[in-house]
Amino acid sequence: MMPGLLRDSIFILLRYSGIPFLLRELIQRRKITILVYHSVPAMRARKHFQALQARYRIIALSDYLRARAEGEMRRLPSKSLIITFDDGYRSNFELRQLLEELRLPITIFICSGIVGTHRHYWWFHTRETGESAACKRMADAERLAFLSSRGYQEERDYPDRQALSRREIDALRPWVDFQPHTITHPILPACSDEKAEREIRDCKAQLERDYGFNVRALAFPNGDYTQREVNLARNAGYGCALTLDYGFNDQNTDLFRLRRIPIPDEASVSELLVKSSGLWNLFRWSSITQKNFGVRSPTQQQPDATAFNNELPRLKCSS
Image 1 (cartoon, helix red, strand yellow):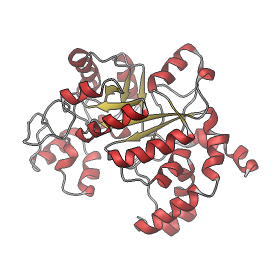
Image 2: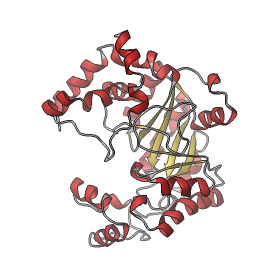
Image 3: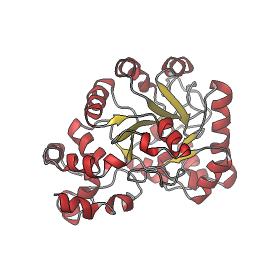
């Protein structure tokens, strides 16, 4: 990984190179950009959201889905951007005042078996990043057995609370669209057919029954999915599913493979603007960058840059 100072310097240079502006004007103007956060602090979120508002038109996920359904994508503003959060951490409640002030629509994907309880997210019971990454590669039963040795049980209530409470969810509802992120956040492709179906189907049913949500979108945990998960989501009655595949979205993007760009919760504004423009994807996967800076993907999956790369000849002519 790059040292922090070097990393920050690179993002600043890229931000002020003018390339993010060109990408916004030449590519993103006609696309729908979806970002994903997890637990960004409110003070940093303010800087991020204000920077995004100055450069994009923030729309709700439901606006995009409605435009797709009605075949009216042209009615969406140019450079439309959607803000999403995954997991439903209790820290998300700190954004309430900011969302009210800025009148920003966001979507938070929550785990129905964890929010409103004192149950834990399983990765907090691993002792290091390597353990968490290893768990993501295990069969589901093996992962749970390993986590049991670390003191984790899916249905145990712990003294401390990690997720949003029922009261907090209710208080956020005027500004937040809550959607499913499965029940317990397993790695779905590692699960049996029965468990994968239950996690996808029952999460939707629980949120509709217990909270009265209008459920239409599923975010795959960790961005991991196969055709099986796509079929299960469709069969459960979802209207779309969101991945962590890199790229932008348009009228032709598979609704059950919507692309998102992950933004680290500790990112600077420069990092945010570089990554949201798509520039960082090109930069980090260049052979020079990998050789000199050791840049790695923030997710386990290689970014799906096909749609982006199709636009590159146009960008190169402009620059």
